[in-house]
Length: 162
Image (cartoon, rainbow, N blue to C red; front, top):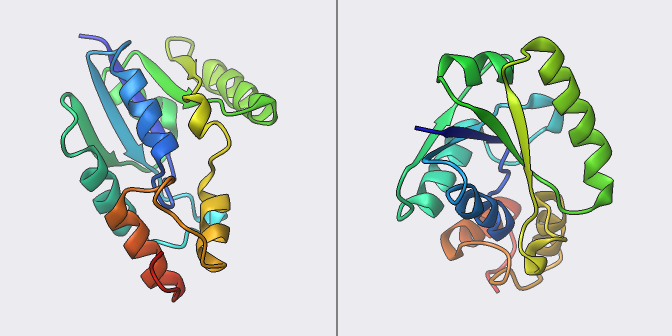
């Protein structure tokens, strides 16, 4: 069984993230979505909330497991007997950072591969940061987020649902 680990902060999970998960299922028999604490990003939602939202969005997807993890990603991947780290590349601007992380992970553990997937064109510009800005200014979120995730985001930032 080929297992891929898709790590991220998912603050909040967007349709772009979901697209990568679905695409990953074409390559892997099982995808573990690993929600990371990542305090350096200062997430809007706490870890338990992000985990709950990812579980909500992926509920109908077969062969997807949603978990949290702490520590080095390569150690987690090895512990779960996974075959690769899954990363989404939206634009060239993502490539440099993701390439560096993949090389560091390879240096830490030569057996862990990184697989880069491109999202559908309709999601290639989406980031959680941009979506939070759209929400802060009262923009429509239906094209970007699961409806219940959008409601949670709007409640968190104190904006009316659109």
